[in-house]
Amino acid sequence: MQVPAPFEYERATTVDQAIGLLERLGSSARLVAGGHSLLPMMKLRLANFEYLIDINDLHAELGYLRLSDDEVRIGAMTRHRELLESDVLAGVFPIFRDAEKVIADPIVRNRGTLGGSLCQADPSEDLSAVCTTLDASCVIRGPGGAERVVTMEEFHVGPYETAVADNEILTEIRIPRKNFKAGSAYAKVERRAGDWAVVSAGAAVWLDADQRIVDARVGLAAVGPNTTGIPEISAALRGHEPDESLYELAGAIAARSCDPVTDTRGSADYKRHLADELTRRTLRKAVERARS
Image (cartoon, rainbow, N blue to C red; front, side, top):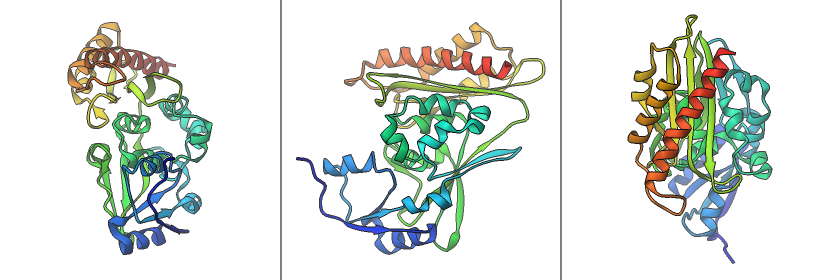
């Protein structure tokens, strides 16, 4: 039977209290919300902590979705189910609903959080790819209420490692909005429903009045040490009217830009093929949504 090593349990009721506990307990403590990634690792003794700080009571403070003309702000304790069911979010960034439909199962989606997904920093994690695609920024709060904002590229330092220090907490994700026709989409190949991705891709495009691409972004997961944004695709697509030849170019760039490994989910060549194909599919769908 798999059981974690012994640990002490604390429960925080405010963000400042959680940060205070982290500051006092240091690297021996870890926050837990849904726990669907952390607890299995602790059961396998791949992660051992002396203290777990339960932050589920922070949902009232950090479980929100706020929409303005310039950006969307999502609290880090927002549940997967809330992201899936939000018609407001789907209307602005449908990529979220696409991704949430293929994340795990209802049990996980009812408890798991956006912040927990990002802080796990798994290279195959869906919402990390979504946030990378949308050029999101992460708000990190430390002692004394000090806040700093980092990009997704800065947030993910390496596999299972983030820019959040031992005495800090991720509080909010900010996604910019642009004053153009926008569309986004997400696609994932998995071995079984709700599994980690073999490869997944997200795409977002913004079109001007002449139906030309003002900006475009593609984010891939499961093809390297971190979820991967590809600036070369953005540069290649800007200023062009979208068509199949442009999607083909973007797919080819995605395939050669990623760095997958051969494992039980597939060979590196197969994953590059998927990166190519899924990039084309998501760009095509994102453009369709922008036009409509």
